[in-house]
Image (cartoon, rainbow, N blue to C red; front, side):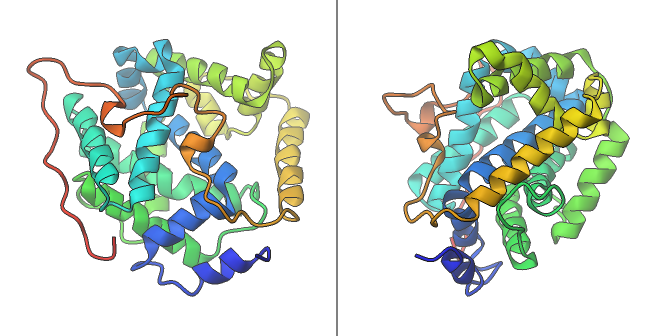
Amino acid sequence: MRRFDWYDRIHRLDPEADCVRITQILAAHEFPWDVSKALGMALYRTYAVPSIGDLLFRTGEFTERTQKRYDDTALILNAVLRGGFTADESRHALRRMNAMHRAHGIGHDDLRYVLSTFVVVPVRWFNRDRFGWRRLTGHEAAAFTHYYRRLGRHMGIPDLPDDYAGFARLLDDYERAHFAPSPGGRAVSDATLDLMATFLAPRALSGAARTFALAILDDPLLRALGYAPPPRPVRAAARASLRARSRVVRFLPPRTEPFWAEDSPDVRGYPGGYDVRDLGTFPGPGAPQAAPAPRAEPHG
C-alpha cells in the first residue's frame, strides 16, 4: 500500500451511509495512536463539569481503579466500533454502557455533552492542534459525526445536532456554561494524570510526563480543574514534540492490519483476554437495569 491509499479509499465511501467503515479506517489504520489519545482527552475534558466529575469521584472507580476504568472504557467503545453496531459484541457493549449510565441516573444534557467531546475533540486534535500526520477532511469529519450520532441514538440521547458544526457549538456552549472547579473533578483528574504519566515515560520521569500532559491542555480546562498553566516554553515544547512526531509518522508505511484497543500497550488489565459483558461496573440491588438490546440499523 501507498501512504494515501486509505485516504483514497475513505473518499470513495459515503460519509453517512459508510460512516462506520470510515471511522474504523481512521481509528484502526490511519491514526490509531492519535484517535486513541484524542478520545482519552475528550473524556478527560468532562471531569471539568462538576456534575460529571463529582459523580465519577463518588463511584470511586476513577480514583481507586483508574487503570481498569481506562481499560474498560477503551474496550467497550472499541467493541462497538469494531462490530459496527450489529455484531453480538457491539450489542453486548452497548448494553453494558447503557446499564452503567442508567444505574447512575446521568441526565441527557451531560450525555449529549460527553458525546459532543467524542465528535469535536478528535477533529480539533488533527485540524486545530495539528498533532496528526495529516489533517482530517470535511468528508472525514462528517463521517466521524454521523458515526457518533448513530452511537448517541443507540444510547437513547435525544436532540442530537445534525452536523459537526452543531456539535462544536454544543461543546463550546456547554463548557462556557458548566466548566467550574469541583473537588471530585480535581481528584479524578489527578488520578487520570498519574495514569497518563505512566503511558508517556518510566516512573522515574512521571513528574515530567505529568507536566507534559498538562502542557497540552487549554486554559479554560486548566482553570476549571484548578491547575496553574505550565510555563509558555514548556507548553510550546510539548506541542512541538507532538507535531515533530506527526512529521515522522507521515513517512511511515500505512498500516495494513487494524490496530484495536486490545493491541495497545496502555490497555494492561486483561492479559488473558476478556468478555465485553464483564467490563465496567454493575448496578447493585434495586438499581435500574440495562436497557433492552438496541435494534440494528441499516448500513451497519
